[in-house]
Image (cartoon, rainbow, N blue to C red; front, side, top):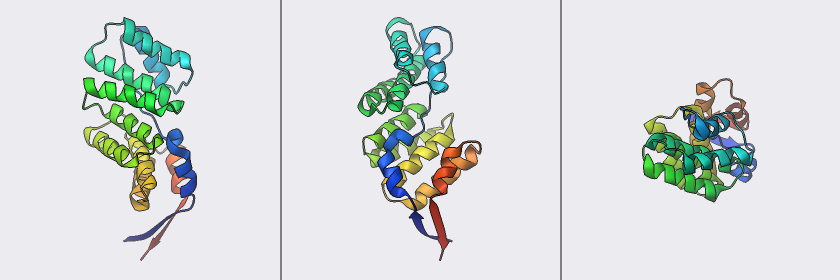
Length: 186
């Protein structure tokens, strides 16, 4: 049985906010601005010009409900990467009005809420996203671990960092977080 949990550098993560969170972009197909926005979000771009592609898609393209919600999520991801948490939150909430069961919108809304120092709300969003299923579950578990850690629940944080590392063994971030922990048995 696992006993006492300590985070060797908890303060560093708490100070980090959502800057260290993982964003989940949504693939939008069909060409045009929406697809270009999607591709840039998926590949990790941060430049404002890519966010502007998303806005152009939303303003000028006839998108179905899922692609409109996905484009809102992708635009929010660009804002989240620049730590514009309130603006990102508005995009994620607009996406959820269109697609309430969109896991990626919930994960990203949770990441924005971590940045806004609302870990309880973040935890609820991310847990719901995991229940619904997301395309990148390692990122969801990583973000939920951040929320747990901000709430002082180090055992749950450790379990989610461990799950993220298992789900994506090539991703360094969860392993770096796990290296801060010391687990003792009672």
